[in-house]
Image (cartoon, rainbow, N blue to C red):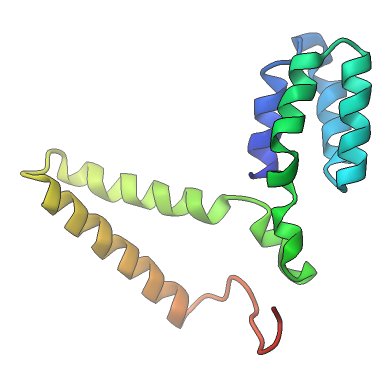
Length: 134
């Protein structure tokens, strides 16, 4: 799970007057699993059981990115690239408006995804991959 979306989901369960405080504590706790577990216990002690249970539910998803090389963490701990792809799909499909059938929608989506893939393969480097890096 993306850290930004995690914080947003947790803050939905926090009283507004405590948003700033809890937001800061969450950002600090995102550094390690141990810090997050400590925060969960503190939140339960403060009577914020819904907030603590939300943190507990996502705790393993938050740190999946750490199984990859550390030089990639900054890029893969967020869902920015997926959000960009979804935004491009939406932007280009809105131009068409109504599709005659499901297959035409799928054809357009696949063409867009192929185009994005080719752009990333030939031009941009999102992650520096070396042999034996994983």
